[in-house]
Image 1 (tube, rainbow, N blue to C red):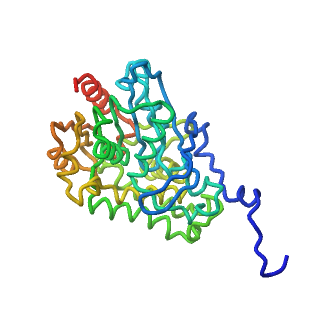
Image 2 (cartoon, rainbow, N blue to C red):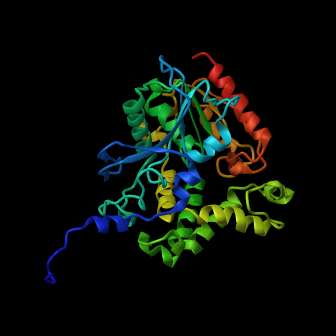
Image 3 (cartoon, rainbow, N blue to C red):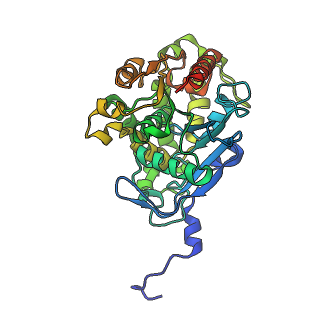
Length: 373
């Protein structure tokens, strides 16, 4: 080949773009399916030429299609925690009563993401910026195309999933009968923006990140460890650490005797398995979550659009979505109620460490689902 001649990418080149990571396999996350939305234009101006959304369903959609529940996922999370912790017979989210759909975030590791696409135009560092609104538009398109669902009995999500829940309720008020944002806000705060930036900087400051062009997440191990350490400080409450609650948490094939061993074998192990660019894609999105984009920056006007019966559900020890922030927003939502959830774990209470937390979530969701709208 002449020096100036350009070689067209081959299928082998495309395969080399995809980074295999067992953390995102069905064996780890549970079964899921992929659905192509085709070319999908993003709010920031980019395009994903073939957007594949990863989703999982539980239960059966009835003929009237009035038993549908939608769940969105949080930062670093997938559908896995929902089916492991929140969904089950006899629970509020009972697949014997409801048809439950969980859709994984764009760029989050299972749906089209920087390390999973074989398209060189958007792979790795070239992946376009994605907003919360992009996820919600894509979720609506998927659920209409596959299931013909135009209205949800309930939309629920935690943390970044709460951001998406608010986006659903503001963007598509007629489609959401009930909403339950858990441990999250409709408009991200300056504190959360700065916090998320430290999480992102922890990754990008690792030379192994290489401007987003690493060949394995293990090359960014130091950055992922620093990322995990920040979560250990802010994701878990001061009382979680002081009380020794961590001593009673059990995981298969691992144990710990000291809080530093817990940090190493739990938080570092969990985040160390993830893809750095996926975390960065979600982090950028999280920072800019804001339903007031629909109303020229007027948050009251945006939340005033919500017609869903809404239970706002902060966690009492959450250090970056504290109840006071959630209460301020709830006051702007017609008919909203605040239901504070108890968890010594703080924001990581979302993982369901305590039965008292799970009982409170179930009680609130049962009451909400039983409310006539």
